Image (cartoon, rainbow, N blue to C red; front, side, top):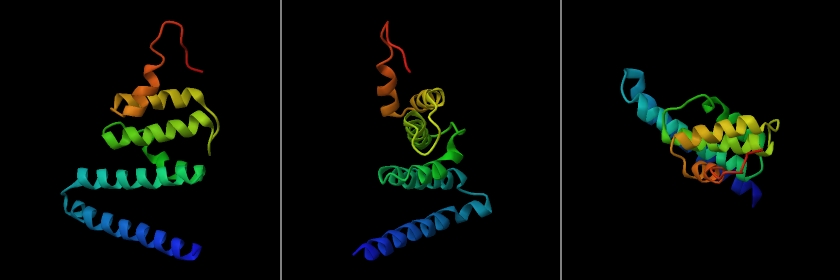
Length: 130
């Protein structure tokens, strides 16, 4: 049964990559670059989140780390939030609360709800982040 799940998972992953290739094909002719970038980022966010949920934190970091410096789309807010969780808990990367807080702030600035909720608890007079 495990081999069937593995084959099905690989088929779904490869099918999504083929779909992305078809979506991004017009960029070769100078059209649809934003759509291609959004689809690719969304696909990578899903793959990274799946790896995180399975406990494969290093794979999650490898998938999402290219988006660490980008700041221009809603889906990147989710990616930055996922990266912040990796740094905050030290999963797959070295524990770095400073980097995690920076990524939480960037994610909240990009409109990601979970990051905004996390940061809202520190608006009190005597509360600090560690």
